[in-house]
Image (cartoon, rainbow, N blue to C red; front, side, top):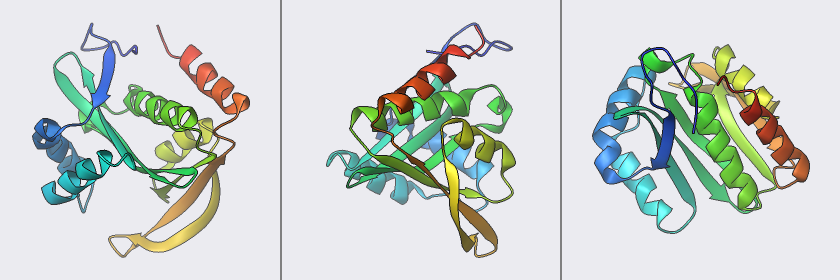
Length: 176
């Protein structure tokens, strides 16, 4: 599906998250979040996938899981619940690939909008989301660990041809 060169010759691929992935997902979760989700939380989220109101994926380079992401569907909206990339793989386009899959799924499901919260200090993530058409819409004070603020971001028109063109443009600009 992707590019990513350095330590690999394998393309980045994604697949639907399953319980068998949780050990590695939790390892990444523990590395990137001060207050990581628990095994129980992920199991609950995977149960919701059966109802069609959640979707989680994992990203691999070869046999190495390098990240994961998820969506929660509510009415005509898709909420990005999380995107996490192993720190040793950050800055190589993994989050972009995960976001491409999540955005395309949201479009294909006919969602009108996507939303997410991002830590106010996470400028790299904010830049990624802006590329996908997200704009700040508010702030949740002390949202993270009851100390850091979250910026609420929205992308509207997800179900439009213009949004799909934006996705195709991002895909076309990946390094080969």
